[in-house]
Image (cartoon, rainbow, N blue to C red; front, side, top):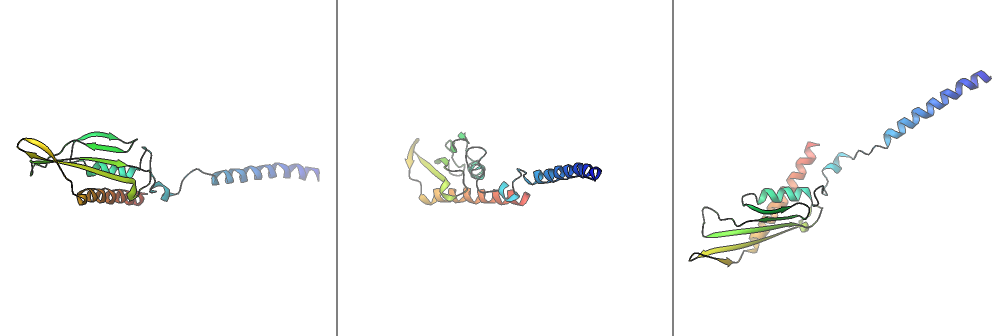
Length: 150
């Protein structure tokens, strides 16, 4: 009887060790796939999708400043070759780590050339709204692509 007890003890220890290893695998730090493309992706200080979409949207104009930690993109003056008598300058500010419409602010300045001098001119509110819509649409598309790739 003592010999059987001595044999059962190592078997019980081995069974507990195997069970512990199995349970340790359950405690993995892997995140579900859906989290990888979550709306809150901020490895650069601001929402990554909004940042990339903003850069793509204003890429036609030369950049003066691009601060991913602070979420600010400032372009230099840009004159459309088809309308050289007018130029625009834009500032895009990303305010949050979430992919939301209120996490984005676009400001634009416009100047027209009058007798060789650049004079400030009003920017239509619809123009700024259109830029924000384009950025948000691109950011959502980037997120959808990230989900599809996983």
